[in-house]
Image (tube, rainbow, N blue to C red; front, side, top):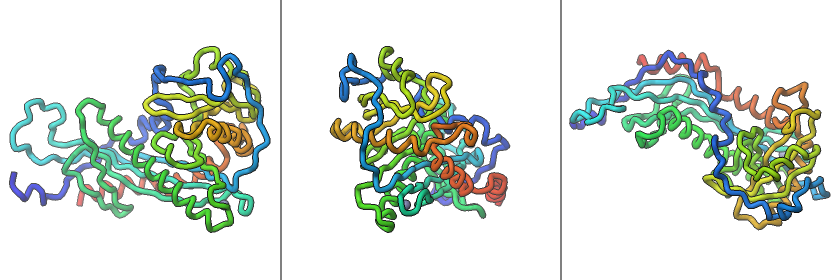
Length: 343
Ligand SMILES: [Zn+2]
């Protein structure tokens, strides 16, 4: 290969494909088919003694920080590949162009504190080019630069799934960044260090190192508990929770189910699952569970205001609206990409 190949700029074209197609994977919060999860139920109560746990009197945290992120694929592009030195033996993906995704993503935190109520504390947005093409470089456009994010192609995983997972990882990293920045910013408005509670919208996977952090899971596709204990979840009254248990899938955490206040309906109406780190002492996990019973029902949304009520908490719904606004106008972004491809 000659050295000019390295210097050559990346050529790409934008697909006519509608990027909103298949975007429902965006909210894939639970891994599908997780029936092999191991569960240790006897941390707080022995399985024979399992019963709904009522709210207890615990002191308020200094502030509650809600963390959330949003992502949007702006376009599918095709990156032209330099001619191979020798023809590939199996021409599986060794075509002359490789599919890639241009995406926007943003993460932020809302602080709910006694002094100022609910207010936006930190927000960050990014644009990224997600690809397996090793010749990929950043794509500057008039609407911002898509930073090249090259993922190793193991030739086994479906390419769309691989790129979507890479985007999700970057969004997760950004959520950790805004959460850390939020805790720094808190020092500015009279919240005692170490007195806040962090609530992450979604699983806590990859973020269990954050102190005093809860993951909030709103959709339930898998029955993790053994059948008799699982049946107890639908018997929870508003504000009640299950005992704390340990669960392990590809990662371990403490978990419990909690019913948010809601109009009685389906057996699992208003049920959320909360997660915290696996490596904290059991009493600490139980204290977090008690705290979640105090805090989360306060922020539950009403059915008439939000179709995803009550699990879509009010501060999180507001944060999501702001985050989506920060992503920018999709039509403008798509046009800017086409201009960049043509130049
Ligand atoms: Zn505040």
